[in-house]
Amino acid sequence: MSVCAVLFDMDGLLLDSERPALKNFQATCRQFGLNDFTEVYLTCIGTNLARTHEILQQAMGQVVDYPAFAQTREENYQALLAQGNVPLKPGASELLQQLQALGMPMAVATSTHRERALLKLRQTGLTGYFQTVIGGDQVTHSKPAPEIYLKAAAALNIAPADCLVLEDSANGVRAGVAAGMQVIQIPDLIQPDAQLLTLGHTVCDSLTEVPRHCTFTPANISAVDSCCH
Image 1: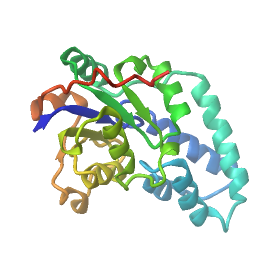
Image 2 (image 1 turned 60 degrees about the vertical axis):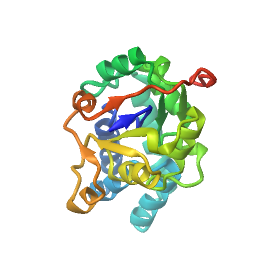
Image 3 (image 1 turned 180 degrees about the vertical axis):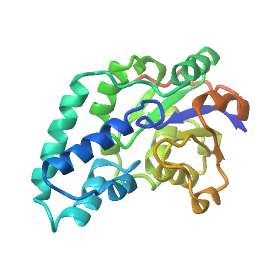
Image 4 (image 1 turned 30 degrees about the horizontal axis):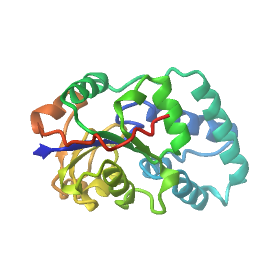
């Protein structure tokens, strides 16, 4: 596939952050004396905060004071973030360095709120690789809708068909495909099922495999201002 720009998901793709987030959710469930809602939580991966709250409240609202649960989970997660020790996924640093050396335009399109995303990128030293960061609070329709990827492509002034989306989640894959972009999935917590595979995207075991599937043709983005600050 010929690629002029690369659009990255963040959690579970660049950062090994989905596992700590899941453990935090499970710990908060235990704190509230709840049964296991892990399967429900996993369906939220890739969606923005508002959609996550909708899904969880619908599933848990009859058995717990959901606003209190959500606030406690957030406080616990903030404490986790403050430690600043989220590791990178295997191959993330090497791929970013390779693409930067080629002059590839790169953006992050994450369902995480933008300010939190920027904090995570700063903590992990990744901010300087990206021309733009689009957060889940900057779009009306969360993944699996294509809006966030279309917005990222527009920010880079690159046609959707010339963009490569790198994703870990099913919701993110569907968003990239719906945006008319080329998609490579590197699964994290959940492997793609047969239905997802019918979309025809490429699946890799790690980010180290991505270059062998692509021909990188960097677009000229000299007019694009970095907003990663």
